[in-house]
Image (cartoon, rainbow, N blue to C red; front, side, top):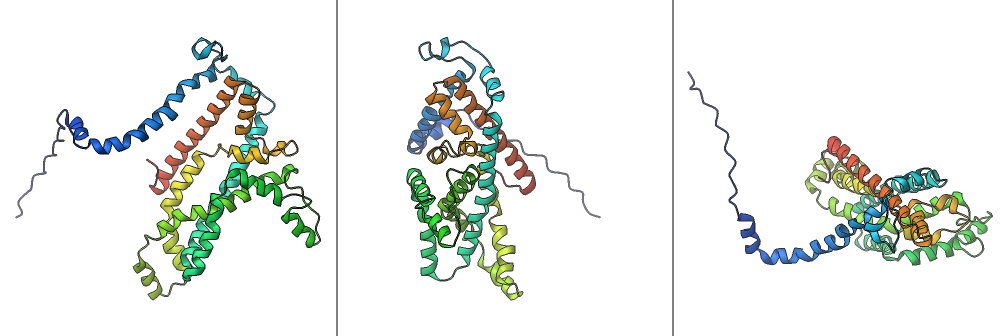
Length: 318
């Protein structure tokens, strides 16, 4: 006969003595001192300015100040929803962001997988340098390059089209071409920099997995598909969540620099409309309400995609 064993009683959670937190701070005060500038930065430049968000719900007048300006509630948001530009701004913002996500997100992944398979040291370094370099070009210089290269008369792109017997294309004055020019130039500028994160993830792949796969007769493509690609899926999910979290925040500087009255139909996005309404026309409360609406949409998308990713892949930001 076997003796019965009684189940172990659950251990009680150990109580943390009072004051232990402050003791830890006093003991490691040098480490907390290093963290203090970062905490101060976020408090001063990110949390304290939230005090001014209330002007989105007031009829703000600079001479009266924030507290003395009359409260109007959701009047500015209702005005934006009923405005003529609302659906055009939403369509352009979502269109450009979705275009960037569909085209720009997979390119660094493919490039990282390809670079990881290169064995030639000199050629691999040359490819990395060529693809990384555009990331360090400023937005102003990049916009100037795009305007120069896409010029119908003297641009290199149209000169090549003419040399092949085609007709010059007005890339920056034709609304239908704006999104393509904006997205593809952004992909070219940032694809090399994005591969760094994926290459770092690929560096952690155990070489023994590839050796075992080669013994089993797996081809190089099969090893990339079944070993390398699954190893970077968690990184892909995290970056996808971050990209969706800024889905409605199309880069203002580049859009503004490439924008002109002829392509305004497809280039006018929420960020440029906020600039025009707030700084140019002086409608501070109206522009603050639009900016707050844009931020709330990004926040909701971030929470939703993070929760979906956590359920499907058990990888999330929190």
